[in-house]
Amino acid sequence: MTMIRAQYEQRGPVPQDVIAPVEMPIPDLQPGQVLVEVLAAPINPSDVLTLTGEYGMLPPLPAIGGAEGVGRVAKVADDVTKLPVGQTVLLPVSSGTWSTHIVLPAAKLIPLPNDADPQQLAMLTVNPPTASLMLTEFVKLEPGEWIIQNVANSGVGSYLIQLANIRGWKTVNIVRRQSAVEGVKAQGGDVVLVDGPGLAKRVKEATGGANIRLGIDAVGGSATDRLASCLVNGGTLVNYGMMSGEPCQVSPKNFVFNDITLRGFWLAKWFKLATREQQMALYGELTTLIAKGKLHAKVARTFDVKDIQAAVAAAVAGERDGKILVVPKR
Ligand SMILES: NC(=O)c1ccc[n+]([C@@H]2O[C@H](COP(=O)([O-])OP(=O)(O)OC[C@H]3O[C@@H](n4cnc5c(N)ncnc54)[C@H](OP(=O)(O)O)[C@@H]3O)[C@@H](O)[C@H]2O)c1
Image (tube, rainbow, N blue to C red; front, top):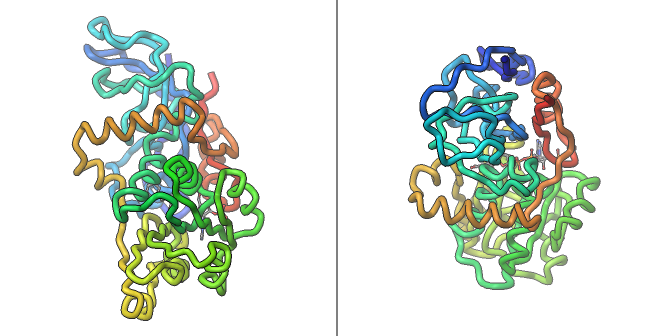
């Protein structure tokens, strides 16, 4: 029996050009191992940066693409007794999830609800905890407070809106195009504005002059300074992404006269520092919210693993209405 995996042997500036589907035999199971059929795996901006070589940590080559996803147990080694065939499982981080199948140690698999939407569960590992932690790790927000974020129509952005609503905070949401405004409002965004000149004035008018203490930036460049200008004196701006490819800019006016603090967030670092109990508590809460349909991200399109180059190209293209997912056909 064979499987198909999306493999790359080099990194390069055009990410879809370095990866290709490769057919290979499914290895025999060793003691403690499980064969998992992949159900769904997203293509995130960090996956793209891993293909181009710009991400903060890079696997040795050759490598299989895909950092997160979910699968279903298809076969277990004789000594595996606690994972039944048919169980939905969360795939370990960076296990090469753009594959039809993966052989993994049973001990590394976390069971997930079998009755939840696998495409939504496939996006659990990276973006929901990022949104959740940025809301709690930097500023202790009071009930009813406002937060401002850009890339509000992204996966992280939409989880952040939904989590803020659940926890009783209001959101100012910045997008880079008018065509994204209605979708963000439909996700529950309180205020949605298009980035550009006069942003601070427009935010002030739309929020009735709210004192915004937390800003969340994934763009960099001059967009960072526009968010900084919307914060109250002493406010905190958290950068967690580089969609513009430019260094964050914050004017001396915002640093010196408005006492703005600029911080960075990286989920990989949180994983290193958080205890197992903290990780289980956060993922337990997020899994329940996703399984109940209270936390949801739009899916723009799905692709078979065989079409990995078209899938990566679609993920790289801007102005999508949701995430691109690899959903292997059988
Ligand atoms: N630091 C961490 O631990 C961490 C964890 C998770 C995610 N992230 C980062 O979070 C960000 C969002 O990830 P995601 O998976 O939610 O993204 P996504 O769903 O793929 O959406 C990408 C977003 O980026 C916007 N965008 C693309 N190019 C842009 C540009 N040149 N200038 C401004 N906006 C641009 C898109 O706007 P359009 O729709 O208009 O194209 C869209 O809103 C990424 O930067 C990712 O790397 C960081």
